[in-house]
Image (tube, rainbow, N blue to C red; front, side, top):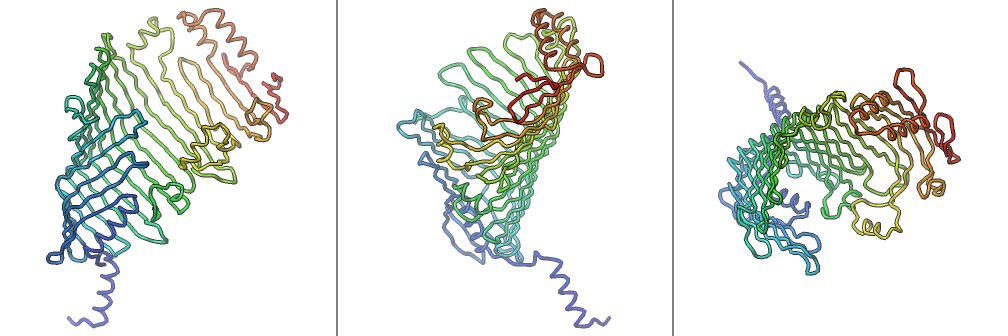
Amino acid sequence: MLVSKQGLAVAAMALCLGHPALAEVSPEQVWQELEAYVTDMGYDLRASQSHAGGALRLSDVAIHMPFPEGDGEMTAQIGEMLLTPAGGAVKVALPARFPITLTATPKPEEDIEAVDMTIEVSLDAPEMTVSGDPGDTTWDYAFERIGMALSELIVDDATVGRDAARAQASAGPVSGTSRMALADGLRKIDQKVSFGDLTWDLLGNDPDSANGGTLAGALTGLRSQTRANLPQGDAQNMSALLGDGFDVAATLNWDSSQTAFAVTETGSETTGSTRSGVGAVEVAMGPQGLRYDLQSADMSIELSPPGMPFPLSAAMQSFEMKLAGPVGPAEAPQDIAIGLTLGELTLSEMIWAMIDPQAVLPRDPATLALDITGKVTPYMEMFDPAKLAELDSGNVKPGELNALTLNGLTLEAAGARLSGTGAFTFDNDDLESFDGFPAPEGTLDLALSGANGLLDKLMALGLVDETQAMGTRMMLGMFAVPGNAEDSLTSTIEINGRGQILANGQRIK
């Protein structure tokens, strides 16, 4: 078969274009990238270098970081690393074990104990390969297991034994890929890691008393995904980093979790356990602000208090918490958000038997759902310690509240249901109409069902007397009107621009 030179050239070009991993990076360049990354994170990285057969041997590798204001330091004595060329990539050999020492040195005027702690790190079957070009490298790594264990604890020059303090955690199998690229003064990182199952075991006992406790748990199917733009500079100055383009978004997912705990106090022990199904945490911070979102499904807790002949338990189908807001000063109003959901909360029959032995109240699952968004104008940098300290004087205003919107409120329990929506704006130039609070203007719509039925049941249980029930009904009559269905009420609360408050068109202020 005859093959032209032009055909071979085209085929070779296609292979090169289709396999960017053919780009080469040397051991020295990998070390330089690692050193720059660690330094940019605020650590000091030191090592002795030697060459053998094209490989770079690093001895006495240590990462050091002093704590702010001279309150102590952290040092990781990694020991030896070997960086070996491997077909355009670099294989990195890591030690199986190394210690991390933490020293907390309080100032004389601080009533805090001095602490020296050593944590042993273990890496089972570590594998790491670095490929790509200088300034744009991909790090692939895998470990059968990564472990951390407290090996020594000294408090005020006295060694604390393992019967008084124990801490260990491990994860595995671990595998991941991290790509780091330099562009426009930023270190751009894209990372995906699978941690396998994470387990932990903690113990703490007060040697001067019988008080103490244990905590053990596990997360299965733990995995993370991170995208980050990190400025090259002082990693300890978050205000400056945000101004230079700091932007991080990370997601942590797991398949299930469980914990078991025991607490002993004054000779009495409380034990318990928790379980949950699928969960996730999302965190993002950058010029656009800070965002936090936690979600978990199928949660349950069981508790055995002292003197209780049977355990108490509760379960919840879903839990979610959301927070979002700005992190720095701004001239224009910025978005904020607050959300909380406790979905389908149920109590065990043992708890119900203590609260309502005659089964007067409905056993329906309870739900709370709250969704609020709004606008604020921040005046301060959240991560500036000097500015935050000024708040203690009471003469510094952190910002302005401009608007709040109640997108949804739902509260269901014991046969009653409250729901609502609304929206308000706030006049920060009027601090007199509402006793120093910015004057609001807007409307809140509420709907309540099953309230009278619930009051009757609470009276039957003896939890509410007739006078209290009558007062509650009179108050509801002042602020609400009958709805379309039986035992239902609606209410529209309006605050106008003149500082007046109206309930269903009737002025009450």
